[in-house]
Image 1 (tube, rainbow, N blue to C red):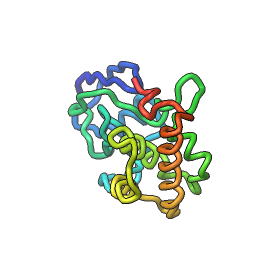
Image 2 (cartoon, one colour):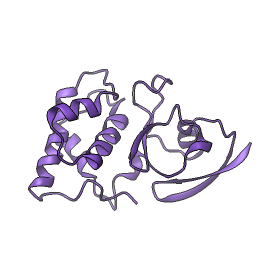
Image 3 (cartoon, helix red, strand yellow):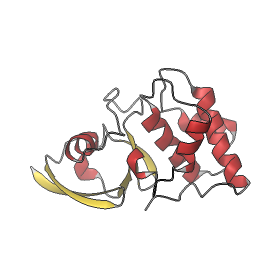
Length: 165
């Protein structure tokens, strides 16, 4: 066991864990964050996605000792009671069905939009390809991302990067 310091959603935490422990387990079990989910355990489904320094990262495959940056989880997107534009678009487009994949979908979409604030349909499909949805709501997911792009272009919403420290 060793002490590992992580900055999660703008708050610094020190945990005493085995350095090879998956980040997902530390987030859920030690820090009580329930956004990232255990899906496949192989980094292929995306349910465990978090953002580490702007990059969508599979927390089930990331050793906690290797994390060298600010971590954002689903819980860290909304600020002062106001949903992040991606979260609001998910509600507006009624994306979730069972909801299991939504953590990974939302965080993958946010990372995509932070990298490319005006993606084409092809870029959206490619950028989201690693986040799987059992309920097949891919058209709604794409519509939600396009809604965020449209609201940013018309100035109706805050910046996609707003809300992340």
